[in-house]
Image (cartoon, rainbow, N blue to C red; front, side, top):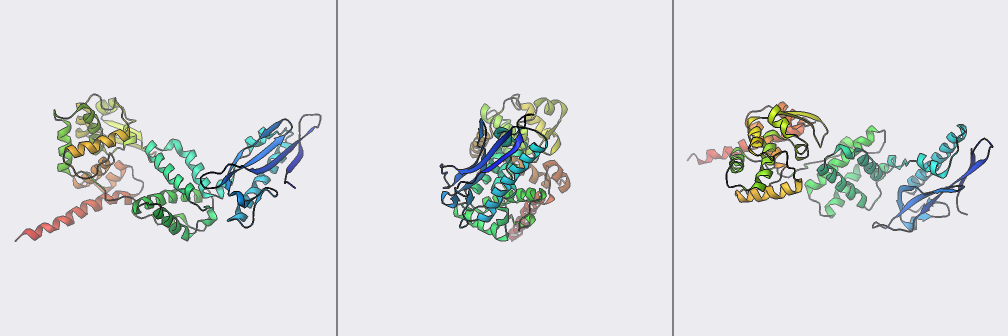
Length: 395
């Protein structure tokens, strides 16, 4: 017999007519790329039906339509069935609240009241919902990277219940990403993002076997590329030369502005030309951290903006800028792989080379952790150690 949850506990009006509310879990026939089918909750009342989609998906072979439960032989069956029981319990609670308040309950109202609670059990669902909530806080580029991490999580063939996040999970997931062709720094970057969301989960009171702070991220960047002073000078002189094309001048202007201010691409596109030219300072929310920052415009950055009236008036995409920056670098004989983000590294390393302090650099860059800022100190120190080889040429 098909399992139904029925209730005759809601008054329709003062005539004490009770409404029958029925709920039923149904696994759809549709099978996605992972071989799973989505689970729906069918809700019906006289003259009204709704079928809200749960965020649960199961292999058809693991679902028992008679009991409306996951078969005991399926992976994580006990956890999933507990989720289903909790959903039914929530339905009962909603019905009770409506009854006690003499309010009529229909399928539509129940569907509106019913919100999934599986995000506190399933990490994949938690990640997606948390990302949806925070979408407006991120720049387009950063959001795109977050969605890439989420896509890899969703493609992971195994469930990731919070109860599955043990010290062994990190190693298993690393092996999985490596099997898909991800290089070490990409894997570390994915783990760094996962760690952030696990920390969010712990702060939300969700418990799991692994302490999120114990997740070992490792190096998330390859060798940081930056322009040394003489290299930056070459780009700077080309910008002010008569040989540069109009298209390249706009792109290079934005790039040089970041080299002298450290401001990220996403934030640069939000700045106003009059603030730079007239007030000589800008205040903005960093598109990555959402941290409010104030940057004083130095003379070099100011001259770059003054030189081209279209700068901060005519906007371009980050994809276009990165493509053109590579062409400009090649034209100038620069052999390193260049992107717009190199400008930020260029500012940081040159700030340290010019004897700027680490704490001031941390504030300018908007870093939340001094360890991130210290990377640039280590880069400059390494350069000094490499110069020790000059002594070999004494005689």
